[in-house]
Image (cartoon, rainbow, N blue to C red; front, side, top):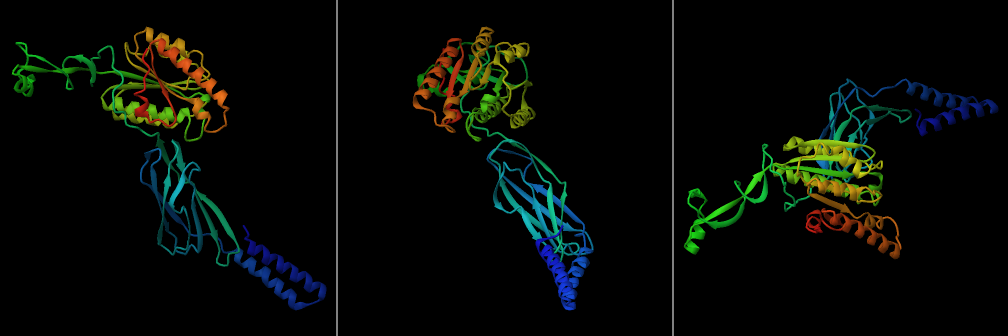
Length: 417
């Protein structure tokens, strides 16, 4: 491809030849032909040598808001110089360049290596790919340029943020006899302290609380909380209505944060966690525990996008054979545009499930992007409060999650039925 300089030289050469012919000026014709000949000779010089490009990432998986360190190692494996070569590493537009440059002009000799280092900020969750690498070669006199791509891609998963959940909110009403344990708030064999009681003949000697004995003069025994594994089910609403708000603050983004945080908390407690995401269809990850399940859940949440309009009752009806008896169920939804929510919550409560509804307030997220009249806002808030109160009346523990409230604080604001 010709550069602007080459186009100007060709235009000048042709003009000089034509003007020389009109004026019968042989010297102008020679100068014009010299320009054209110079361009023709330069066009024979092509190629930029053979390059070996290796991209190195600081991590293949990272969390939303983290920094990604990228390094490109470019080596000229040919026996001639590359001359002027421009290298540009294509990065997703969702990522922001924090420091360094993903572009460099180089001129490498045979066997020489140079490196490009830069840092990307990852403000959005998702599945991304870095690459391909764009190359542009310019010859010595900058008359011709050749563009090509090196199809070298690096896949990357940005997980949603995981917040600290300080306090256990739920317990299974039915002890499970599987590997792993969670604390039930009833006396029994376990590790967490429950209460003190008087010594009864036959109690293990190691259970005696000697500090209490020294203080009261009576033998006291430590009671422990009973341990049993819990199956926790998380239902995440990713319908199209969950996109209300800004790119970084909307019910779906907050919902993924909540789902990831709850999954992390319960898996660390050695519980089994199942995840169901419903939009235009239902995606279900069966209950399991351990680090493998944790990263499966994070990978699934990273690819969630708002679409569809599947009702909640259709989800609970489809999953009813998979729900463990008495297991807690988290419903993370803005509750907008779905009239089946009360019926679904009532059915779950009727089957002895502990239902926790964590509802990001879409009404307040809408105010972030549009000017909602105060009267309309108050009416929508009142309608939302009525929906939440009705759900609490069906036996659910309801949490109204405001945009400026941290997850750990929101989990404490529970409306008991």
